[in-house]
Length: 293
Image (cartoon, rainbow, N blue to C red; front, side, top):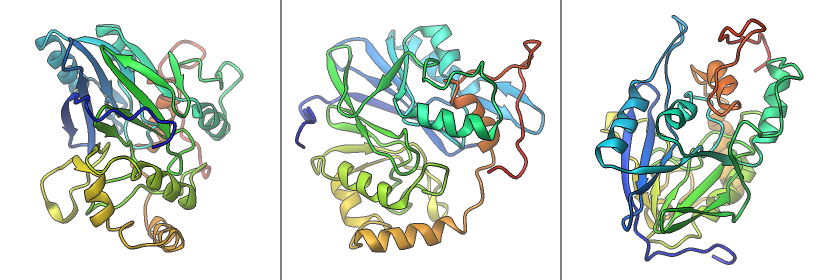
């Protein structure tokens, strides 16, 4: 892995927390040599029909951090999720830590700022986040050095975060029997996604890979940890396929998929680093664009 500081000798402690409502896995990642930790891809609960926000899933993460006496240093978003709302600011208020996402969130903000007819008060410069990661950028979690890999294709801002022998791939990959992420959202591209997956799979075979989602193919129990070697050998969208074959399979598959149930609230909240938009009177309010997505 030229130019990436891979260090397989670092073995972070990883806990996954599965959210059944959105099939999302959030992670607490702990430095084994200190009490420092990061949270990756948190979830804020929403009853969309009732317009009601709650924080049960986030509170579970917060309680675990407190129970273990950990110091939260980072709250990482692998990308601007379209299927669940981020609880990053809620967690930050309780525990501290910096909220980080890939620098191309600015592209996502520009695209969806137009779709949701956001006014000039909505900044499209990523300033809602504490840190914007670039390809190869390093950061510390206690004594561990982590780095971000730009892995677009699902969205322009997707980043894989590599922490020692653990890589958090966001929606780029699913478990081998689940395949890969869709590439038909604005700014997505199947060929770019394939290139990003090859980038991830060029990491050492023993690298642990942690998924952001698991939709339990065939009704099996949720799973979220695999390895580079297992993905290369068994991923149903990748193994034995050329780039051209992958593009065809991915494109045909995407044509059959419905929009995620929570895409409208998720995008509005997540391009704001987890903050709910407000109307001119300061009331929390979501928009529903018609025939725009």
